[in-house]
Each structure stands twice: as structure tokens, then as C-alpha cells.
Length: 165
Image 1 (cartoon, rainbow, N blue to C red):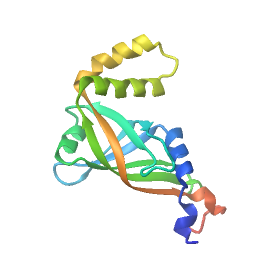
Image 2: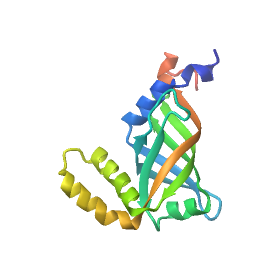
Image 3: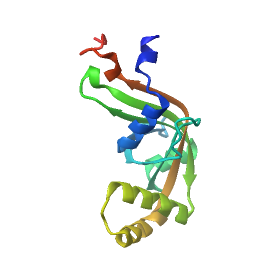
Image 4: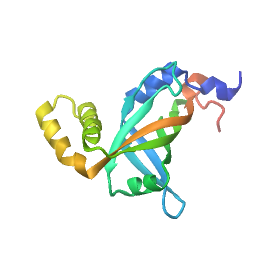
């Protein structure tokens, strides 16, 4: 087994990792061709370890944001979810994705409500719905469908430095 194969997450591990983390870094291409990076909250969707892809992510952003402008020009992104503060603890998932821009206000509000429920547990649902309804007309939803997924989990190496240095 190659070292690369040894650190790859299984489909179940991948779904668990993405579900347990809360921030994804989204990379779009700016007007000058350089990457534009932005952290976003997200909601995992369509979780099925045996499916291809095993998951999709949903999020939203302001319709006039640089991300949205970039995505109207080129709906391809790379997403990164990562963790670890030493080589032997590095874990992450990189996903090349096609983006579906959601502009229907009700569908955008549904994504916003899913985000609000995930990131503000225990808050009154009526209050969440009112806050989301006020924001939805200014926003677009992003449905991220992976076309390629690369994962790594250095904790599988079983050594302090993992031979990486």
C-alpha cells in the first residue's frame, strides 16, 4: 500500500469529518485569474458514503459579493476543510466542485434556515425564520457538488512526524 493510500479517508470517514467540521474555505477565480479565498459556514447534504459523490455542501453568500460575481463567471471552485496543528495530526478534505447558484428566494431561505439551525442551536425557530427571511432576498445559495475529492489523515501514520520532514 502506498503512503498516499495509507492516509486517504474512507467514504465513511470522509462523511464523518465533513459533518463534524464547521468552516470550509472556498476558492473561486477572481477577475484577474488569481484565487479568491473565503471561509464559509456550510450544511452537508445528500450524505451517502456509498454514493458518488458521497456528499454535497450547501451554503449562501450575498448576491453582490466577490464570490458570487466570480461564480457567475466561472461556477467551478475548490473547497478545503482542514485541521491539525502538527504534522502527525493533519487531516483534511479538498473538493473540486461544480456550483449551482440558487436564486429562488424561497430556496435560498431554506438554505439559510438550515445554516441558522446548524450554527445557532437552541435559538427560537420563529426568530431564525424572521432573520433568514430578511436576508434571503439579498443572498444566493450555493450547492457544491464535488467532481474530485482528495482526503488525508496523518493520524493513520502512527508516528510523531510521519516522516514528512
